[in-house]
Length: 468
Image 1: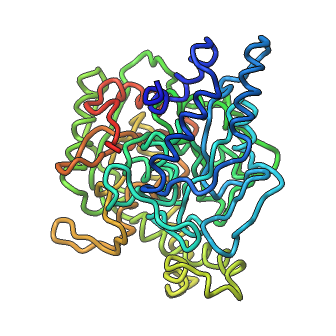
Image 2: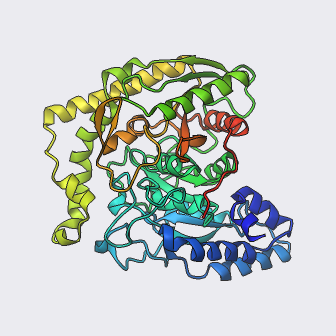
Image 3: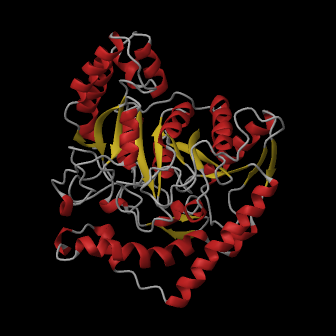
């Protein structure tokens, strides 16, 4: 029963709890036992939340009393250690913040608790959430459950590894360029970055540049992403970018009355992609066509004119670095290699910065044109499957690429704010998960979730877990 519980999705656990087929204490204990058994090898969990079992007992008592309960009543969840959690360590992957205990929850954490979910633990991340691998001086390196010699990605790699390994059914993550979608792709779970501002960033650090940061759920199933999104979305009166009511949706809904128009690409100015990753995207496109969607191979001229990753590099060095300097001043000896790398990058000139901003505007215009013709864009999540620890560069098609090239297919949608979902649809020749990314127009979350749900039923790799 324990093995069944740790690999049941959050929606399934909620149903088992509502029907009294299992208790919250049993569910929470099963995950605590799994953490004890597997976390020493993976290092995904960095802090256990005090009182999880007591909260589970209280949840069981509420159910027994027949009271009104939330949709995630008694279900445990985990949270990336950049989200504030009241009374629970939030150390942001840095000795500079060692021992820090917030007084209040981040908005997203509070909303999960309001739905009845029980905070189980905090998960690992790179220093300040800034890198494609989850490693830092304070809590160390997280390993990929599918291969301990590989990374589970960053910056939400602890969250993705915990869910993949059965230590958590559902979690909260944040995304500046890749950090919700890439780690999910590396570990074979699902994740969702909704439209920018849909989920308030209140209580999540860092927030600069706020126009690029997104928050989103990570889970085992698309239905869990849909449920979590329904609970997390909507203004909180504190985040000025979170303005659209949750009910506002420009998508097709769950049952469109016409064939969905899908475009797919694996290049179009984004640089080289691993052949197995490209083949997985093509397989997903073929599956959607077989299922009745209208599917075309596409190119997007805006991506070919303005490389999104180059724009990101020019903008981030001038926007992220000042935010980090505010906390690293006089603590230079406690900085990890990622922050030192950022510190050593040359400044972007004012002229190049303005041109990069205009490039982002051209990208937005280009995607506006694209989504006049198509409902969905299907493309890779990462340009390669999960990589070895310590990646600095790699070679594709005879070209040497810097480590950040893994994010060239995710960063466009941090610039533009479009909703984007990561889900596994294949396996590499050496047994690693390969994912595809589903993107739709701004505020069209229902379209993303509909297509992802359909792909989930068509996937050749459902219900596969790492051997631990």
